[in-house]
Image (cartoon, rainbow, N blue to C red; front, side):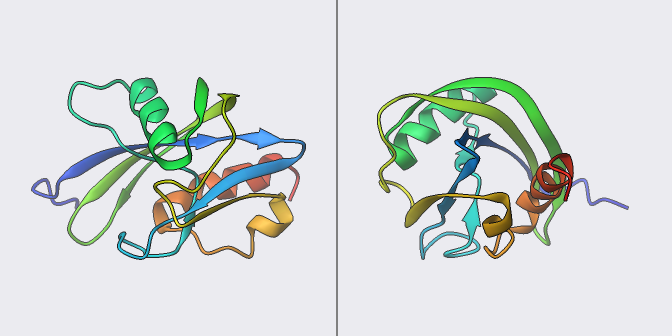
Length: 136
């Protein structure tokens, strides 16, 4: 039974593919799940749409402008003290080149390489779906 008093945080992330490689970002050392890798994105602030939040987060974290496409995966993941409504959207970089501004690092990796990176639990479902769609 789910604890209704547990805060629910809406988080959006970008699935960006370029030449068979996918963009992942490394969380900062001060973040929850420090130095884990993730699909880049962040929390949706009050009054923002998912698309607005994702465009803002991509500029803050990586200094790029993105076009937000279709919802790829949605998962509600429960941690001990909060839950995350995690939504991954297919996106395309339409302006700028990625730079590690609000993240520790970033990389474009193949699906095979992605399996060797440590992701937070909320990201794992999207990763499983991505790997499954690609015949793995």
